[in-house]
Image 1 (tube, rainbow, N blue to C red):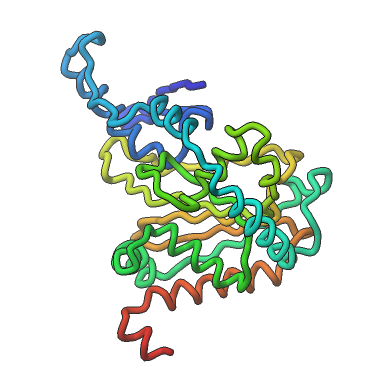
Image 2 (tube, one colour; image 1 turned 90 degrees about the horizontal axis):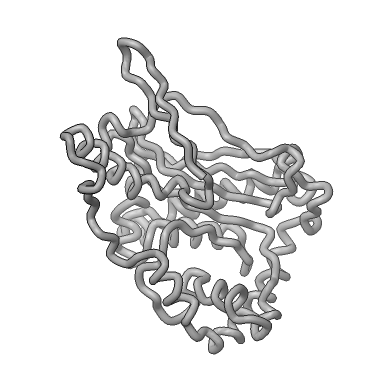
Length: 289
């Protein structure tokens, strides 16, 4: 599940290559993992014995959180997930030529279209805009996607980490997960398939961790070419700190047999336009209308 390799560059700084299975860690988890690795390394370098190594306690152990979620009663949400969900799945199909076919649509057949949000809009989306709306950054990004689609659209929303507050309502899909996977046959009718996946990976600033930041060398890690695609369209968004400022970058990976190139590019442009509109200061947004 995990391996570590030290690469000696002689007089230059070396590299620690950590390979960890995705079941154990994801890209967002590094924000928690790297400071803990740094803390352990510092203690070892200072001569602390292994039995005496210490880390801050986790506020809520993952197992305890999982048991809490498994014990939730979400049966009152069934009408929502069996009604609106099915309707959204039907209307979302209008974006596609056909359903995804795992025998035909694979990693090898996928195409990618990348767009960037300019630094000014990105800066507002990372601070003032979500704060003014009382929502998170990923809520704004997803809302803009809904506006770009122009219709109720069923989306698999990839999450990272845990939901801190278990609130009433759709709850970011938590209730759906509890009903579909933990409630036996009671929720058998909510398994409508989404053709779109939406994923905000957040922001990673390697300089925060000094020598334990990400190395500048990088390589794309892809899936096997014959692996069936899970969605007709996957939108992966990251926030990148560059020499000219901070900007968001969105990669639109799609199956051309499911949705054509022109439709993807048009959808991406409408999404960018929706982001520019929602990121306008209040007085400009009113004047624009």
